[in-house]
Length: 128
Image (cartoon, rainbow, N blue to C red):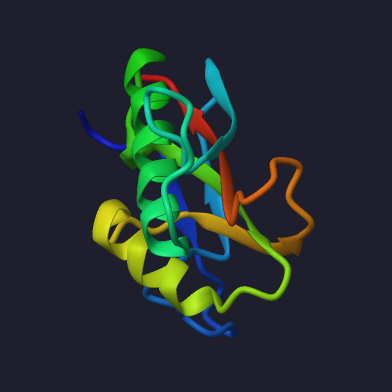
Protein backbone atom coordinates (compact mmCIF):
# COMPACT_ATOMS: atom_id res chain seq x y z
CA UNK A 1 0.00 0.00 0.00
CA UNK A 2 1.55 3.31 -1.06
CA UNK A 3 1.71 6.10 1.49
CA UNK A 4 -0.79 8.89 1.02
CA UNK A 5 0.87 11.32 3.36
CA UNK A 6 3.82 13.66 2.78
CA UNK A 7 6.23 14.94 5.43
CA UNK A 8 6.72 18.71 5.77
CA UNK A 9 10.18 19.74 6.95
CA UNK A 10 11.02 23.45 6.61
CA UNK A 11 14.67 23.81 5.55
CA UNK A 12 15.38 26.31 8.35
CA UNK A 13 14.39 23.74 11.00
CA UNK A 14 16.29 20.75 12.36
CA UNK A 15 15.75 17.66 10.20
CA UNK A 16 15.04 14.79 12.58
CA UNK A 17 15.38 11.29 11.08
CA UNK A 18 12.70 9.94 13.45
CA UNK A 19 9.89 12.44 12.95
CA UNK A 20 8.57 15.08 10.57
CA UNK A 21 7.71 18.63 11.60
CA UNK A 22 4.34 18.28 9.89
CA UNK A 23 2.41 15.99 7.57
CA UNK A 24 0.12 16.64 4.61
CA UNK A 25 -2.80 14.23 4.26
CA UNK A 26 -5.08 14.19 1.22
CA UNK A 27 -8.73 15.07 1.59
CA UNK A 28 -10.69 11.94 2.31
CA UNK A 29 -11.47 9.44 4.99
CA UNK A 30 -9.38 9.45 8.14
CA UNK A 31 -9.03 6.95 10.98
CA UNK A 32 -8.63 8.28 14.52
CA UNK A 33 -7.12 5.56 16.69
CA UNK A 34 -7.85 5.88 20.39
CA UNK A 35 -5.11 5.45 22.95
CA UNK A 36 -3.50 2.03 22.90
CA UNK A 37 -1.53 0.81 25.87
CA UNK A 38 0.72 -2.18 26.43
CA UNK A 39 -2.06 -4.69 27.13
CA UNK A 40 -2.14 -8.08 25.44
CA UNK A 41 -5.25 -9.74 23.97
CA UNK A 42 -6.38 -10.80 27.46
CA UNK A 43 -6.19 -7.19 28.69
CA UNK A 44 -3.14 -7.83 30.88
CA UNK A 45 -0.44 -5.15 30.86
CA UNK A 46 3.01 -6.36 29.92
CA UNK A 47 5.89 -5.66 32.29
CA UNK A 48 8.31 -2.82 31.58
CA UNK A 49 8.31 0.26 29.39
CA UNK A 50 9.93 -1.41 26.38
CA UNK A 51 7.49 -4.32 26.30
CA UNK A 52 4.49 -2.05 26.87
CA UNK A 53 5.60 0.32 24.09
CA UNK A 54 6.05 -2.50 21.58
CA UNK A 55 2.65 -3.98 22.50
CA UNK A 56 0.94 -0.59 22.29
CA UNK A 57 2.34 -0.15 18.78
CA UNK A 58 1.29 -3.66 17.76
CA UNK A 59 -2.21 -2.86 19.06
CA UNK A 60 -2.20 0.44 17.14
CA UNK A 61 -1.11 -1.30 13.93
CA UNK A 62 -3.90 -3.89 14.39
CA UNK A 63 -6.46 -1.07 14.57
CA UNK A 64 -4.93 0.60 11.50
CA UNK A 65 -5.10 -2.65 9.54
CA UNK A 66 -8.69 -3.32 10.62
CA UNK A 67 -9.57 0.23 9.55
CA UNK A 68 -8.19 -0.32 6.05
CA UNK A 69 -4.91 1.57 6.36
CA UNK A 70 -1.42 1.10 7.75
CA UNK A 71 1.50 2.78 9.47
CA UNK A 72 2.67 4.32 6.19
CA UNK A 73 -0.47 6.51 6.19
CA UNK A 74 -0.21 7.75 9.78
CA UNK A 75 -0.30 11.54 9.91
CA UNK A 76 0.17 12.00 13.67
CA UNK A 77 1.23 9.96 16.68
CA UNK A 78 0.86 11.10 20.26
CA UNK A 79 2.83 9.14 22.82
CA UNK A 80 1.92 9.56 26.46
CA UNK A 81 4.58 8.35 28.91
CA UNK A 82 4.07 7.96 32.63
CA UNK A 83 5.71 10.87 34.43
CA UNK A 84 9.19 10.04 35.64
CA UNK A 85 10.03 7.23 33.20
CA UNK A 86 13.16 7.46 31.07
CA UNK A 87 11.88 7.87 27.49
CA UNK A 88 14.95 6.29 25.87
CA UNK A 89 13.63 2.76 26.39
CA UNK A 90 10.33 3.78 24.77
CA UNK A 91 12.17 5.37 21.83
CA UNK A 92 14.19 2.18 21.26
CA UNK A 93 11.05 0.03 21.44
CA UNK A 94 9.24 2.37 19.04
CA UNK A 95 12.05 1.99 16.51
CA UNK A 96 11.91 -1.81 16.83
CA UNK A 97 8.23 -1.90 15.79
CA UNK A 98 7.63 1.35 13.88
CA UNK A 99 10.92 1.23 11.97
CA UNK A 100 12.11 4.32 10.14
CA UNK A 101 8.65 5.65 9.27
CA UNK A 102 8.54 9.39 9.82
CA UNK A 103 5.40 11.15 10.99
CA UNK A 104 4.45 14.14 13.09
CA UNK A 105 4.78 13.15 16.73
CA UNK A 106 4.14 14.58 20.18
CA UNK A 107 5.51 12.98 23.35
CA UNK A 108 4.06 13.96 26.72
CA UNK A 109 4.68 12.94 30.33
CA UNK A 110 1.37 12.31 32.10
CA UNK A 111 -0.23 10.55 35.03
CA UNK A 112 -1.63 7.32 33.56
CA UNK A 113 -5.34 6.60 33.84
CA UNK A 114 -4.66 2.87 34.22
CA UNK A 115 -2.55 1.75 37.15
CA UNK A 116 0.85 0.39 36.05
CA UNK A 117 0.42 1.67 32.48
CA UNK A 118 3.70 3.27 31.42
CA UNK A 119 2.77 4.29 27.87
CA UNK A 120 -0.28 5.02 25.72
CA UNK A 121 -0.20 5.86 22.01
CA UNK A 122 -2.89 7.28 19.74
CA UNK A 123 -2.79 8.06 16.03
CA UNK A 124 -4.49 9.76 13.10
CA UNK A 125 -4.18 8.06 9.71
CA UNK A 126 -5.40 8.62 6.15
CA UNK A 127 -7.41 5.77 4.62
CA UNK A 128 -6.57 4.96 1.00
